[in-house]
Image (cartoon, rainbow, N blue to C red; front, side, top):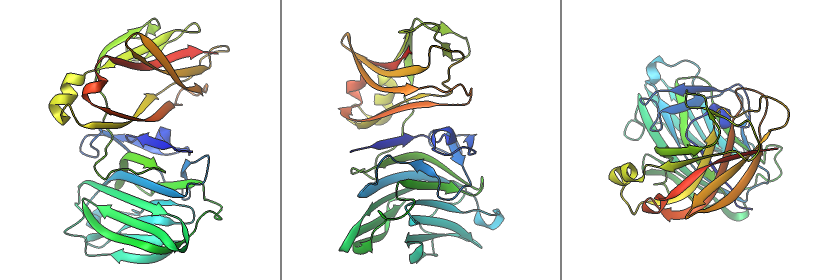
Length: 306
């Protein structure tokens, strides 16, 4: 089953509690980023993927002034990437079954400090010297092996993608994960809203409250500004609708249905149950194939239900 996970940088969208979301455009291209300290925690998948593609941004402070900084992005028992400070530079290690199989310690020409760095990877299982481990950092290919003995399906954490940063000295954002191919050029963009159409109650602070079943909130995208910035023919490969926060306040209404309206037709996507926790979130993500220009005339949003 194909999946795609898109997270601009909210700790609340992880499968683990206790992370911290940080705002600030100096830390992330999306303006939000996070750190969370629990190992073997991050995103819990419904199935074990045969292969995993990922890209993420990480803001790394000057390594000479950091304390207890450590980043893990991996699947199963530590199959993936470890980033840690070593005096004046950041070390990057490629790990397989927890073992270090490659180290890049001379990263001065690859890693930017006090800046946002972009990493892309592809991990594929293989029992017969046909596993893949491929990692790129800021456009530089630092490791590419297609003959790995790599098997994580039997690990107790086989369904877990670890997304861990031990401190605010390294902030994660702009995450895309999938078991289908991701281009190193893909990135998360926060869509600017042009208009909002709703029969929910406008709370006046950017939030809306549904008081009856079947009330809807639909928003159109400011396509013109996106075309100016990225070009009309730039590809859109996935859309993620986010309610943050999204919660129910009483008995009855407890569900949100993701919607898309185009040409007068409304298409329903995922149905999500909202919690009563005021800090909870709801997200619906799907893979698409269209251009930025084709976003024009479409509306995205939610319908409240029971």
